[in-house]
Each structure stands twice: as structure tokens, then as C-alpha cells.
Length: 285
Image (cartoon, rainbow, N blue to C red):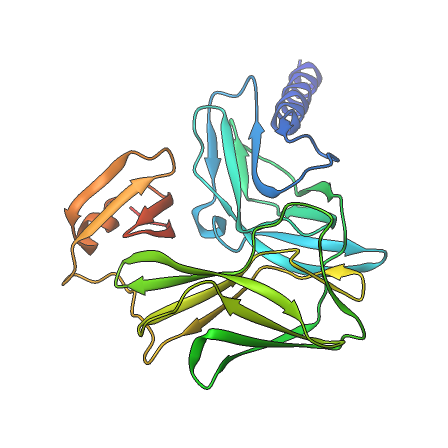
């Protein structure tokens, strides 16, 4: 009888362990994707899924894989379980071409009482490689009507004219509000230099320059997304109790209206848009 009981127990444990590993992934493991941003993992037959709160941020890592080299790209936020699935969100959505690996550690997820063993997810983003060259971006004697760019190292700088690409633009920051101040025309002026010329005059204020990905070819590789702040003093976007807090969940539903930090502390763990900024909330009840 003891042997029969032991055998049944081992069989039951084996079934539970297999069940914990029985998941589907969207996009599927090994997929070719255009952007690496959200991944959904579903346990079809699960009744209870728990996520280790201590590992929600920083527990999961995304790496670029080049041969035997592995380069850290971004942390991955693991949201709480919704029904029988979880949502992994790249803290910095990735569009750069290359091979990527998402590493989920032990003790990250528990399915029906069984801890899911560490596992990896692999993805490929096709296209031109992204340059690692440095960009020096400077205004012309403080005027944002003309901006000079120097790329190093770079032996040949050119415009990427093979596809429709959003050109550089300037955002004017006014507290929590922002408006598009002007777009820029790009002129290549040397082997590693370029000039941005504003399409209209720019007045005083706090600004952020955006140079979208793939405007330039740097020795055949494209530029990453580039941003640079220009301001007499930096804008303080810190949320504090003295300022009214408005927050929305990722579905666009408002969850805080004219609130404060105490209201933020009551939110369920997840990603929210708080006063116009994407923030991760991890509240330990």
C-alpha cells in the first residue's frame, strides 16, 4: 500500500510540474517581430497564477545576442496575473534590428502552487543594424533654429532615403503640457557632420529635440532614436502631493482624477500614465 501511495504521489507531482510548464506565448517563441514591446504568456488550464512581487521590475532581463556575446538591452516589467495569463512589457520598447533573448528567472511565476522553472524566449527583429556611434548635438550659439551634429566614429554619413521616415522635430515643454514647435530639414555637410535647419523660428523656452530612428546611415548602419533637452533650466516633472495627480491605466481608463500620491499608493501593481508620463507602480499591500 505504501508503495502504491508513493507512486500515486509522484505521478501527481509530475502532472503538476508539467502543467506549470504548459504555456503558450504571443508572439510565439522564436518569432520574427517588428517591435519588441509586449509579450503575453498564457496557461490555458491554470486556475491560479501568482507573480513574485519582488521580481516584477528587474527580475526579467532582455539581451541582444550576437554570436557568443550577450548585451543587456532593458529590464522587463512583469504585470500581475490577469485570469490565466501575464503580460511582460519592455521598459524600453525595442525596434533595433538583431536577435534578442528574454530571460525569465526561477521563482518568478507560480502556477497552481508550482513554481515555474527558469526559461528563455527568443525573438528576431529584421532590418539594418543600429549604429553605436556617438552623436554630439549642439545649437548654433544657443539658437535652436540651427543645430549642428557630429558623429563619431564615422567615415561616411548619409541620409537614409530608402523609406518614409519621420524627420527630426522639436517639442516645447510647458510644465506637463507639450507641443510640437517645429520640424527640421537635414543637410549633410561632411563625412561625419550634418546640420538641422528649423522650418520656422523657435521662441524661448524648454525644448526637447527628437531625431527619430533611421534618419541617418552611419557607415551603412542606421541611427538609434536620439533626444536632447535644450532649456535654461530643466523641467521638473516629479509628481508630488502639491500637484494634482491624474492617472490612466494602459487601456485608457482614468483611475485617478485630481488626486495625490496617496491615491497612487492605492493602485494595483501595473503600468499607468500618470500626469502624462508612463510609470510602473509596485505597491506592497
